Length: 378
Ligand code: SF4
Ligand code: SF4
Image (cartoon, rainbow, N blue to C red; front, side):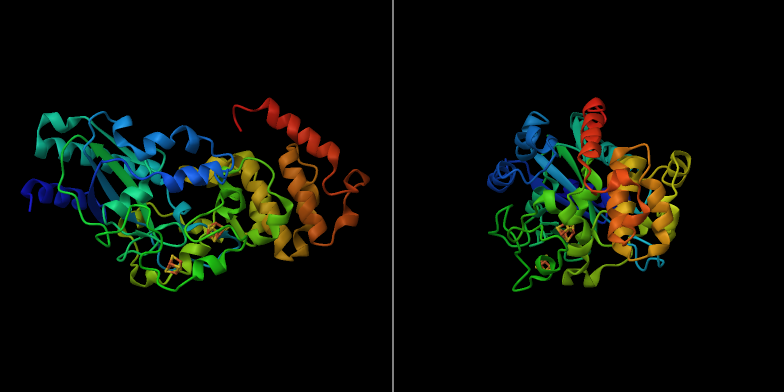
């Protein structure tokens, strides 16, 4: 046992990381990632292509990198209040990118204190860096990659934020969950279970362990800045921001305990927002309600788009007056989805003649022109 490695592990755990594992920084096998990109399953997430090489090879990010420290923060919230729409649980906090970073900076300082000033040059990331966190976490034994393509921890199930530190320090690597497994082995501890694959509301798994982002509710309601394809809108159901279906059905969640660290910055009250309140959001109210959360990144237009789809799926005709009003919204993105929702709720006659067809070509054209003119933003 390396006493300095163990000291580092203790210090990182004391900073609030629920799991701390080390992996050697030798390049990952990129076959799965390359095939996924080649098939275009990343949708509009073009940064995945641009950063592919770095994700597999840490020394392209930090020259001379020898180890990857993988850190997990449990965000299982326990029981949530009842609400009007369904939110991905990870989003119901102050933005984790911001709240985890100070602990990562402190982790870097611990590395330097234990291994000397030479260890002071490191890189740390939470989610947004050029690091294939899931594969590094599997190599470091933090968990295994399930058929749902998520990193699953035997202790915390599917509910971990993953963060990473790249360092030139050679740390004693931990064993993967099964010694001979490769970083890309899918479903190591899934057995015959296929619950996640069967439960996906939009059939986004072309095969176990592979998510076609273009069909995934999480992508469609968050990363996607444009129109949600009509044929996928019913599958969105009540999910207004992200999707936890393939996570929450997983039997490996049975040991999950509420994550104490994340409860400190929880915003669970957001689930109480009714659909009527969401459809009525103004720019000021949006900024106030979602301040400091990751949700604000979809901007008001994205959230109204999603709210219209959920309202259309709700069967609640009491929402029709608001939807009809949104059918005249300034933003074509909102109008397109509001019109769809009105018609899905059987209120087509409430729309003006301009909406004789729900995918009115003139509106789609206007929408395209607007996207073109705000390309930097979108
Ligand atoms: S997040 Fe939802 S839509 Fe995406 S793959 Fe999982 S179950 Fe399917
Ligand atoms: S739901 Fe079943 S198949 Fe899917 S990741 Fe969990 S254990 Fe594996």
